[in-house]
Length: 356
Image (cartoon, rainbow, N blue to C red; front, side, top):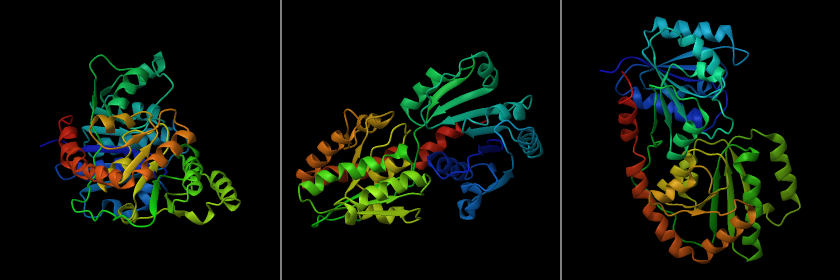
């Protein structure tokens, strides 16, 4: 029997890291006691249904800055009172506080990284902050290498890779061919997620008289970026082809009614959105950045851009719709592969192997 484990995610937003922390807590709670430490007024805390029917106890912490005595003492109190022996931290900003919160507690400390870091942390100060980390986990091979390149790895620490998992539907009603090509993008409305690039790329479909729709699923987190796109569409022939759905709990329903998953996002880890699209047999068109090529290495039928720009997207998109029937057939095979490679039981076992 593994000992009690705390999962810490102190972000307020709704994104891949936050969803990954919730999913990991649910998975591990099947085999051990899990305490979840989250920030007040956060997406994780505000959606009560996250942990309904799961053996997960949620602790809420309030703090004003990433280095906070209040945060240090609160986390330390939770760890001691609940006799926590394992900590899995998803994040980076609060590392200074977590270092002092865990200092001297004999914690098996695991850091899980799922987004690309670009600034080296190998200075003396960060070596101190990371010196008590036992395991660094990248959610894909690219992230494992990024950890080694960027973070200071203590002598006795282990750097490993555990692919993200998702509970995918075993039985999928693949969208049948019809007179319209339906595209979908899943991600918060933010410049780095590439929604504007999608809109501009879809102009090639209009120019070639291809009937299509494009739906964007995700919170509007950058209002200025959203307004810029809306203003652009007002004077565009694409206006009636584009729909911003916003946040929805019906992502699976939209995916099942789509043909192409288009995702020109930079700096992603092993994106849950891409995995879900594979599970529904969609044709993914994504930027060849960070971990994207690993999907191809794993045998999935996907399309990767070369230069990661709108012209690349246009070229690939037109090629896909020109050979659409063949593309749909090839993409169906992604479903079975995704069920096997991204199975939750596999991810759970790999994390359990790191716990004491």
